[in-house]
Image (cartoon, rainbow, N blue to C red; front, top):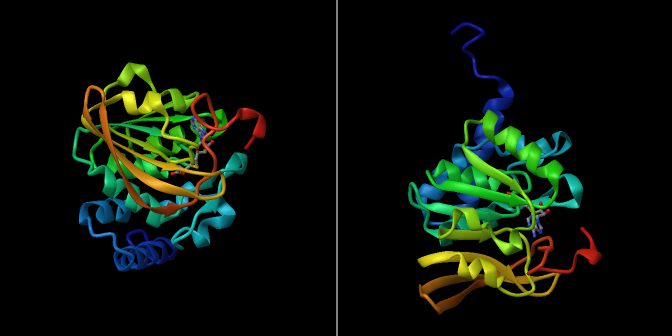
Length: 227
Ligand code: SAH
């Protein structure tokens, strides 16, 4: 093997760490192998700040720009598993952040629109996702009002903590569509899976405790609080 075809040491280390992370996720109850193999295809180290790259495969949230976070891998896996993503499904994500969750959805073959309120984060995520070959429609704005141009959605995923289920999002679901959203006080939420069962009917199931940065906007927390 010549030097050129030898995989770089760093890449090999990341690959090993990624496989170890998948075992951690399995041991924590993630059973959807499609979700796990999608996560195995994505270089999470590229979605975190350079100083954090060595921690990219820990099962923890990490800081990104604008005082936001890239979600914990377990949470990404759980929320994606709850969405039951199939190829060509139309999915709206609220809270692009680093773009990692959007990459997982796109890797599963979904047609993804992702909204972020911080322009810098949206632009960085758009550039990174494109460089990795993911076709994600990144928009800047208040995602609590949804995105009318793409409705109805088969799935909506909110990756920031909401005070209540944002009604505009529930209304932009297709019948049979699923909204996965953390709801609760600012420092601790419960993950909900809301299914639209009819034109004016929804069911909600709890999916356990979680902790997200706040969802800020018209159907979220007050902008004046900041973050
Ligand atoms: N899915 C992200 C996690 C980002 S953290 C990832 O994989 O990295 C949550 C993000 O939601 C933050 O970037 C925050 O700025 C954003 N956010 C909060 N309120 C929002 C709103 N109303 N509309 C769009 N984005 C919002």
